[in-house]
Amino acid sequence: MRRDYFRKLTGAIGIAAILTGPAMSQDVSEEIVDATVGKWLIASETGAPGCHVTLEKDRTIGGRVVTEGKPCGSPWHDVLAAWEFSDGGIVFRDATRKEIITFQEQEGGPWKTPLEVSPTVYFVPNPGAMDRVPVAKDIVGLWILSDKKGKALCRIDFQDKASSRLEDAKAIALSSDCSASVKKTKVDAWQISEIQLVVIGGEDWVYTMTPDADGFVSDDGKFHLKRAPK
Image (cartoon, rainbow, N blue to C red):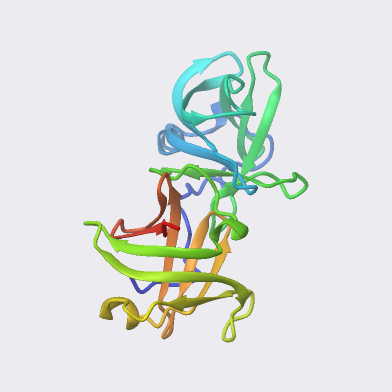
């Protein structure tokens, strides 16, 4: 899992260059519409449970059909009635056609609300089991790294102190009984990068992990982090 630290974090669709000005759906090609429909996650940087939605092609009042998935709690539950392309982004409207939230594409990362909106809300394509955005304060503590078969590989202590090696990162301590495959990565730091937990080791080893119902899962699905039992 050797990775380019500055690689794109999601498979966001490149429509920003196409959607310039107050573009509406009639100005958007069918190819762009087809590439956009599907499953997405709306999730706040606060770490609150997000809302899974499915964007559909069919027309409805206020734009195109959006269906709510699970989980989908407040403030989105039973509020989002339609979606549409607008002003180089994607806008959601309620049943009265009132704009509820707008997302803009950013280069090298997930879609998110405009800079003036606080807290930031992310719009994540193809989220899989991801149901929220990771928050640093919730990461601190002891976790168990396992392979996809559930075999424990290492106990990892995500510490709330600065990394001695990397700026803007925090320290990691590994248990003495970690597997050789984990030890060779020389993992020693972690940080939050928008929608992902980034675990950093020596020689440019970087693991990016997204939240799921049980903890975190690696991008390739081979590794899982779960909170260690107390």
